[in-house]
Image: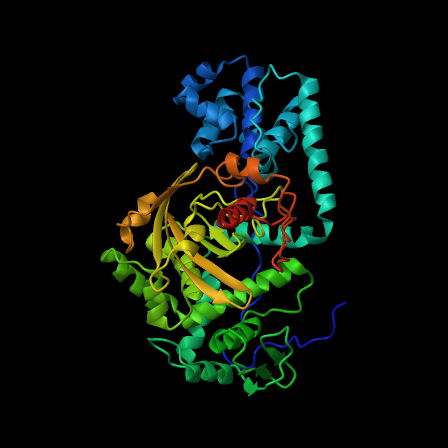
Length: 509
């Protein structure tokens, strides 16, 4: 139950309304709810109703039959002019093409099955795609749709407790992808504060951060006994922010303070659910990064590096005196918007479990049936796993990885935390690699995950023969498990790693 809280705006400095999340993205719809599959099925229905073949309609529209086929299959978004042509040739209005209801019961089933087959649940099953055509019997179509619905219901029922968290993470990641992880309203709020304290260039010192707090009407108190589960506590009534100077905590005090101020500047109120809590945390992290690495200065720095073909996350880290992880996140904020570079980010535990990720470059992260990626195991061939075996931990490790969706170049390094060692990596498609330092690396690997389980999810046959049924590992409990339990008899355990361990020790005996 919510408690009473301060609702007045910040007394000094800029104030802004809370950010609103974007509508949930869809693999088959644009931001305005433009359902390509439903449109395509309606066009096909109207074409057949008019007695036109695919070739005949394509000729009337002045396009290739293959392009019209893509439209009817929901894989191509038509231009407005083409929609107008379609309506004219089919003797309907443009509004008729976007009818609220499918043209027939069969069409409704076809649309539902097509959407299911393009979703993460079907992809996770590694099943062949069913060709949805007029020859597919109606009873088979009904059975397939019913099976998909029942399977989804059972999976969600089994994971009812973490489902909200997984869904919230997935929706937020889709929002970030739709915006290229760039939030101009937060950038503007941060710049107003920097202007107010007359900060022009260079790293943001603790002194300037304290000036920002004072400008917003807050005083600071450092205490030794901050609650263990907190990084800061804000007394909104007396406008005091409590922090700790304890050396056991690994957070940058500047970031912690700026995140606390971000809640005030961005107009956050007590979150009503996990989704709202998660968004607030992401937005305040973005706010802090926008102050520590101001947009104009950082973009200028990155553009100069790009012109020299010397883009490097460690240089961004050093230029603004932030952590490597903060620099990597900030790169994803600005790379697509200002440099025209699509990219992906990963934070992977040494066990191979994915903790955080972002992508807008089409990389194929492993996902569960709901689309959630947190808690999934990353392919052993990816840079984010290979970097753990590199001896040189001082410099970043670079590698090309050939995947089933293209070749990606990644740069990664490892960092130790209280919960273990993590890799932090930034990757880009092959077309963008020329702008980065380390593009000349000869390190290369190939990954068939997640489509082919023999890539790394299944142990090699010779090890399986020797050890299957003879190994009993005790799985380490992980606090990150927002997703459903990973697959396997021992959830979260890399069976190949266990078998290799036993094989090495057997040989020693």
